Structure formats: C-alpha cells, structure tokens
Image (cartoon, rainbow, N blue to C red; front, side, top):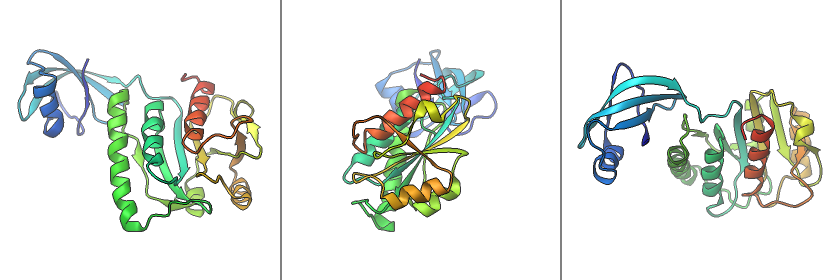
Length: 237
C-alpha cells in the first residue's frame, strides 16, 4: 500500500499537497476509492481512502494505529564528520536501519571541517536525505539531523547508555548491552578514528568503549555495523 508522510493529522480528513500530491496523482495514478497509508511523523500510521486527486489529494482517515516499523530502542548516532559525500550515505543507511537521530560531530582527526554557512546547507540536504530514506523504508518517524557540535557539546546530550567504537580495544556489544535499553548513543569516528585523548574524555563522561571485531572498518561501515548489532541485541532484527 502506498505510504506518505504528512503534516500532523487531526480529525478524519487529511490533505496532501506539493510533490507528494503530484506523485500520487501523476506517477502512481492512484484514483478515488484506493487505499493509502499516511504517517505524520509521530509514530502513528493512518489508514485511509483517497477521496480526490489533483494538486491536492484528499484522504478520508479510517483507522489510526501505532507504526509497526519503529525499533523499540531509540538510537542516537554521533558521527564524526567524514570527507566527501560519505555522510550522506551514512545518514541514508542509518535511517533505513532505524536510527532515531544523527548528530554530526567535529573531532581532532576530521579532515572535513566545514564553516557554519556551508554546514547549514549540508544540514538541510542531510535532512532531506533522511526524509527520503524514511519514506523508502516505511519509517514511522522522520529522524532528525542535529547541528554540528564538538565532542564537548555532544557529551551534554548523552543517552544513559552510550558507546564509542574504538579500533584499539573495547568490550563486545553483547557484553555491554542487556537488551533492555530504551535509548542508546553510538559514537563513530571519521577516517582517522578518535584520538586517544578523545576516547579518554568520552569514557570519563560515562561512554563505554566498544569493539566491532578485529577488522578495521571504514567510517561509513562502522556505524551501519554498530546499529545493526545493537538492533539485533535489542530484539529488532
């Protein structure tokens, strides 16, 4: 069944406009009477029937149900800025897997160090990528891309359980998680990883060092591996 994000839905009617309305009317060629699923990004799905199409698509809401696609555990990915367009790939795949929010961070070994103006443009693009990935994967929420911050600022917003993937050692995820966690933060370095001083800083603030195995993973591979293992240990995969 076709599925689209909308503005907050109240009552038994919903209106879809803009690109989504054009996609419904012209590309999918859906007709009045056909079923459609809407999601307002709050974790609820709205089952409905199309009443009319065109520049505005009107939908009659018949049922409101909790989204079945959201992981029980909420994952915040703290990702050190990589070079090139790697961040775009990381965001797309992290959203598909189930990350709740992504926080770009600036660390000592980041090669990419965008200024505030260029970063603001990047955040806009990143958020659009997150939206498209949420649509494609049938998410019940649109994961948020937070502003770029320092490691010092990142520790001010830590989930109760937070882990940093460190190539020079750490515990296995199955030893650090009991599967009952509700919120988890994951720190992943850029191409050069984290400096030892940064690992010490994080662990002093309660972040636990974790390993993803004996192999060195690229900065765009590690977050996807980490998210997948966390979701498996918490019963989502």
